[in-house]
Image (cartoon, rainbow, N blue to C red; front, side, top):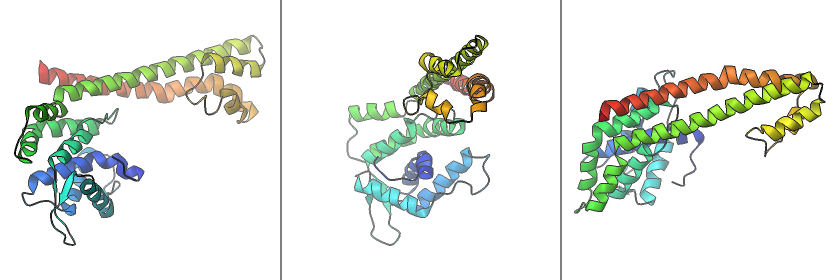
Length: 266
């Protein structure tokens, strides 16, 4: 969807999309902006329990722009022209919004993923019925598309796959940082000139942003007395203090999703 969201609203679109579907389901005569706003706030409240009250705030103007955009793209119909218009989602709009809820990976953002799981698992039959109601016919091809979007097994499998890919990237980063630290230690013991050490590490274990700023340029931009520490000790500390704890969290997250797979399909 091509919209100029600010970054906060973009991060919360999952809940706004789900709220639009929920408001559509509740309002037989249509739903208003305030209905979407309330449900989005409610869904955020369910998942952001560690935040202070009011820390994540969706503005009415953001919701209104979202609804106007849905209508302009054919995903919703504005069915009154009053100051507080009523909307209804089209069949295409229901499918689009459910895709936005179901198909975006929520890597490591546990509460958000488990909200998606809850939403699709518990409202699946009602969601299928809503889509069927928005039109005179419900052809088999469309039913298959709907069922694929709402497939809990696929949802869980996708998240496991995405999480495993992220874990592998993290393991590679940890391995490269450990190897770069060890290589630096070995070369320093051999009294190799520090500029040559940097070139060797850059060649053997380039960091992810090396194409934007080569390691030699990055190291050269910090105080001379800290350069050796960054390559040797700093690499080890980044592993210990950031990446290994993150790896453990992702492993626990993956294990929880796999437990849900067993619960649902054993």
